[in-house]
Image 1 (cartoon, helix red, strand yellow):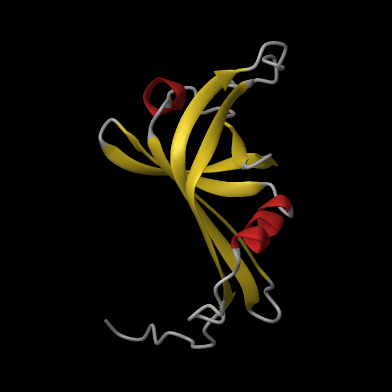
Image 2: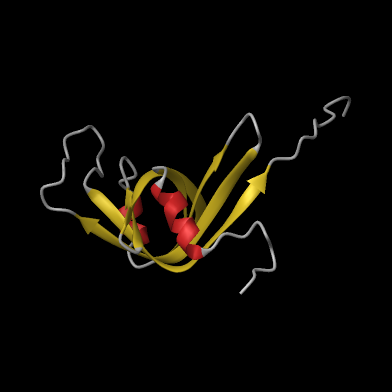
Length: 135
């Protein structure tokens, strides 16, 4: 079946793109306010495993929460790239035996995101130069 948007990626391609990098952004609610955190992650089967690193306060509010995640890559020369978004439910794990002495209070705390939706698009950056003249 043909997709309506030719730049839309199939779910399988989204997962392949997510496997190709390890830095993304986690969107969640902290104290009833939206927050976007840069995080290291990896693909773990059909879920994302996100290292909370130094975000020790996240574990208290983000277990069993609805979260969003985004990762992307853009070639600065061509302006071509991709973006993938994942929405799902989080589950916080404190893996036994994980290193906790690297200077990051939440090292070893892993958030697993079980996806509900996975979407992605190929992107082309605009080539405009904004007019930042008088305001």
